[in-house]
Image (cartoon, rainbow, N blue to C red; front, side, top):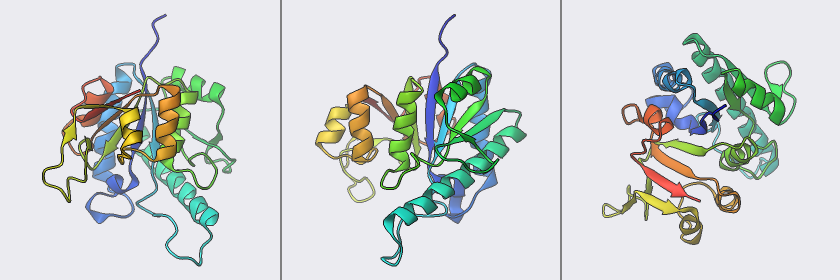
Amino acid sequence: MEKKRRVLLKLSGEALAGEKKTGFDEATVKEVARQVKLSVDQGVEVGIVIGGGNFWRGRSSDAIDRPKADQIGMLATIMNCIYVSEIFRSTGMQTEIFTPFICGSMTKLFSKDEANAAFQAGKVVFFAGGTGHPYFSTDTGIVLRAIEMEADIILLAKAIDGVYDSDPAKNPDAKKYDEISIQEVVDHRLAVIDLTASIMCLENHMPLAVFGLNEENSITNAMNGIITGTIVTA
């Protein structure tokens, strides 16, 4: 039997908040759901990781211990996944949410076998709660799950439309890359994903694609291998 294409999609929490910058913008999430459903209906296996920035941006004060601040962030990603999962279900998709720690009856404890079974059943699989440990970002979380689940590629839907040699918001002459290697990303400390996640991609030959979330049909196109942003080779 031909192996199905399996992709892991990273969504930023801030992007899901829309112009409000916090909480959820239902219209934005419904548009994400519409695009993902097109790919799921075509047989693509889709896993999703969501950041927590629409609720929590990390330690805001020295009064909060870093591990505790990171735990709050993990819970923010779980709230996001529960919400987005429900919007997906309202459009006719089946979903499953996995976390690296027990979270009552709201999620399932992550197991590669159970996650594979969910993919094979045609469900969209949400990986919430990061790695379950402080000091690791959701970038590291998605790379870890992509490697474990033997994904074909990681898709990063961002507010920016690709990888640049400098910040295009500050440098109008910033150069956008159509393709770049993960080794170059590491060498030049380009802010694609954090350094820990970049090294994991490098060592495990996991490719990435970076594209603008707000471009028309960008998720559908990316899942079909049409990348208008930047391909990061491994």
